[in-house]
Length: 213
Ligand code: SAH
Figure: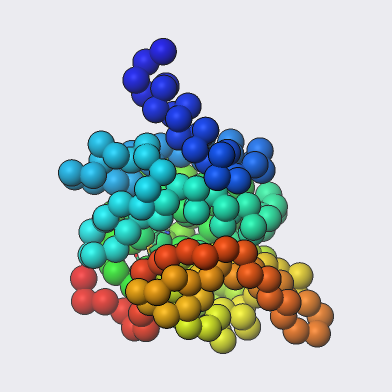
């Protein structure tokens, strides 16, 4: 077996052993080379199940956490999905194999630009990346069937709850930045919202407003 094939096998094994069992999620993750989304020094570690630094002081999430969040989101092939926190673009690329359409927002223009380059390189034509403040959602494309937030807020932002379709699901980390946070799954019902706590996680904070680069 080549080194690359062995690395991929270990990568997929790590996902399964941490509880990513949904076969659609696993096959989407098998198709996305995480190495394309990590630049510079850390690129050599892209196949490890660890978060890694990316530009603008941000991080690409741990693959097993990407898998568990994607699994909890229960994305269907006709779904329109919003991701808040594009970062490297890795999570959006995984979602693009499961959904009809993916909108992804980051407050750092540079991250949006770099992620768009990789989407083009991979020929992922169903992703739209936008440089904007994701705490406000993307009202012009709402409502969304699914919303995934990749940065931690103290509470689910009101505009995101409002932009979730009835029957829609949102997965997001909530809690103080720097502390251990809780991954939350929110289901919008006819009469309100059902909340389910999934597991402890650690994410960079959701910061209001657009960044300077
Ligand atoms: N999903 C990413 C990891 C995201 S890290 C990946 O797969 O690589 C969290 C990201 O959230 C960072 O890039 C940060 O810039 C972004 N972020 C933080 N606050 C934000 C906000 N208000 N609006 C949009 N993006 C935000």
